Length: 296
Image (cartoon, rainbow, N blue to C red; front, top):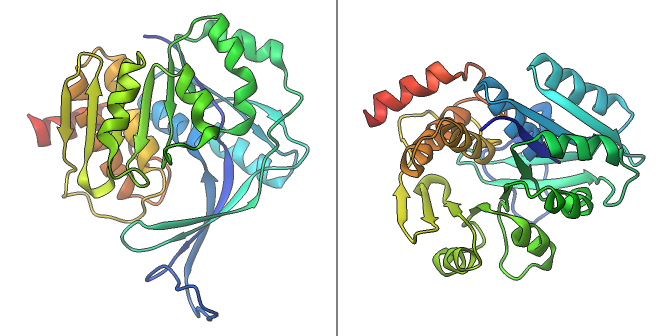
């Protein structure tokens, strides 16, 4: 596998750490640890893959504003190949309220446009050159699905905390060959995984936070992978994208599904021990060292 094209998902976020998530009553919180940083699913995947030396390009939308400049600077410092179009509504921003056990309330204080004037010629060239496309569930990316189908590229998508029956996700589910999803809103996840495999998907992976992950292959093999408890928790932001990226790293090296799930588990574990979207010292050698340490 060569080039990965990641489409969609850059924000600039404010992170507020609380002793517990607030009750729905008027109140004053006198102190909360606060930071601002790059966010969203495309940035998280691109940062991790860049550190893991998997050739990847990120296309996303940002505002022609100070937050867009900060995103460009952060991705540039990390060596991410970042191609962007401007959104006249400005850079999307979130406020994330975080509990000590990783619970999150995410507040969209601005939202990006769902329909934009994009440089479609440039995006088409990126799709043509890619070996696989990671299509994130960002509204503007839907208009690119016919172009992706035109070139018959393998599509990976991350549905995050998918709520069964939500029509918004149907286009992404239909085009995807590989589906990653969280069980947060889907406690009875196995029937849905079986349904997607019956639709012709090659692999479905469902993550369960502290309860590990479950995969179902296209030959109907179930694989359960626990978490690694030794990683000291600091911040859960980016853990899902780190898991996805660790798995994709394994896939790119021709590793088995079982091995790739374990690599994803390690990558997510390293992420939660950091306050960044990707563990600062992440690299292929470290990932393989951790694999040998925990899995032999």
